[in-house]
Image (tube, rainbow, N blue to C red; front, side):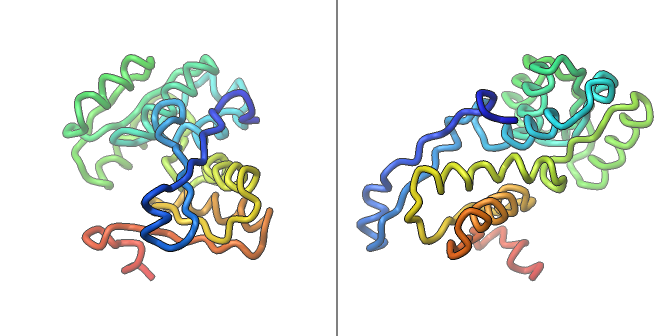
Amino acid sequence: RLRGVVRLTPLIDGGELSREAGVEVRLKLESLQRTGSFKFRGASNALARLEPDVGARGVATHSSGNHALALAVAARARGFPCTVVMPHDAPRPKREAVEQAGAAIVSCEPTMSARESTLAEVVARTGACVVPPFDHVDVIEGQGTIGLEILDAWPEVDAVMAPIGGGGMIGGIAVAAKARKSSVSVVAAEPLAADDAARSM
């Protein structure tokens, strides 16, 4: 579904990181993905799985940036209307990029409860299909293609480390990479000052 839609991003030599760590490190450059982040994978996969008559009613999400832009660009490619609920304090360049991609923006307060309630209002008014930022099987599958690409490019890899936020990317990578090579370790990383995933354990 995603071949020819998403970019196969490079896996490059880690250079100084490898020397400092004492192991071979390679970096997967998802910053070179369309829209500048891995989020385009999940959004594109979710819309590829959507029936055209459902998509024609529109798609909607809440996001302060990367998923918003990914869904807006993916929706434009499919010809689906797109509405994004964004907190009013989202960075201006992010808002402008989402608007330029053709999505309608609905502002809300910068809390998760405000995002979710505003999104529910949008869906009730428009009948749009929600494409969540991370907690949906189609989104997780799309992000998991990162793991497949890593294993294709580097079959000898022993461990994959990726950031964890909502968990969609690391979940997708874990499922896909371990399906391809059961011995690979998958490690989620987050900053000490924002370690909500670790604390939730």
